[in-house]
Length: 542
Image (tube, rainbow, N blue to C red; front, side, top):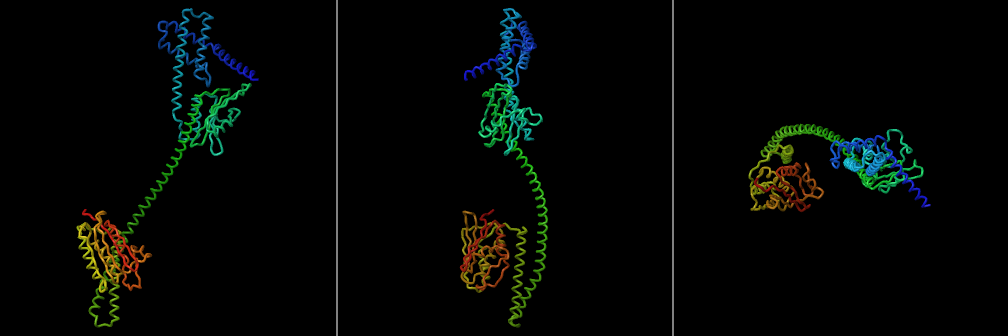
């Protein structure tokens, strides 16, 4: 059986060779005629320089080669096949010349030289074609307009670079596939017209390797061949590119490698298109977001204008109200103080207490109005800060003197510590004193006995001047410590017999003033044992 099969295959190969030789020997008369004309010109005019023919003869040979290539090649023919046909044509012409005695015997040597020039010219043309094909292969496949058009370009480029009867591109999306055929012109796809081996496609898709298959049967009409390569993106096959022959075909190494290069190019192009689409989508979204930001910015600018106007109206309101309230309050305070001093021995004790309540309430309201006015000015940025040389020792000494007047007849010892190395600083003396007075005012109010210590020292490592006011008063409960710097926060305890009320803005104002002078404020407190407030200022002379 094997011998029979071997004999059949040998007969088929011999038959193919004989058919090929007959096609060349029995070439159209126009080809034989053109060869003989060119050969005759070569012999008549190039005898003296037949090894290096003239430009005119070279052009004639080139035209002849192009004619031979056109007449004696078919779609998919390889370069060396056409070269073999030219050599066979040479011997066929020699047979014609010898048979019909077209040339003299001494002229036969020119025939070999002539055909050597023909083969050399064909080689030059083949090299140029190969260079063009290589440049086309190296050029990216890129169409950023449409995915279908990009797939069409991939098929078109494959057809231009590789021999085939038709080319197919199968692309996958989820569980569906789309098929494109090189000569598909719009009619419904039919596997009868363009057969595809789907088993081979599935194998390539699953194993991600290029496969080829050739089917050869006794019935020549059913012979076919297919080679398929995977288009892979991020370790996932998104398509399969295939070359098809309607006859048996042996795929060589070069065809396989060129197909794999095209598959990689197709993968890069498809991936690039997807990224481009994402970028385009992101760009469109960014344009939308930018427009939204522009509108938001416009609305914010309008809101800021309204807020500035409201702030201006608020400042005017506070200034007017403060003026309207302070004038009658000063009158009330002044007259109540005058009445108490002039009528102290002339009116009943209860009436004197009532006058004192009027006096104290007036003073409380005046402090509250002044604090509200100060805070509003600070927040509005309307408070101007002086930049002058400040002697911190004088501030501590003045603070101790003020504290003495605040504690009255309480059994409290006043102490103060001053670092002699503490230099003078540049700042606003009035505002620094205001901060210190607000702190010692609280210390005097919440301390009934013990001591209050005012200290100032230098922290040269951090370039800061550190002030502290330590008391042995009632302290602050843990749950109240977060409220210390809040506006209008009232922290007191009736069991300690503390009845005097403040505005609740003293520590808020102190914090705001220090913030604008580059300083900080913080505290430590233990309930029923005492509190220490600290604040710092930059230690520099700039």
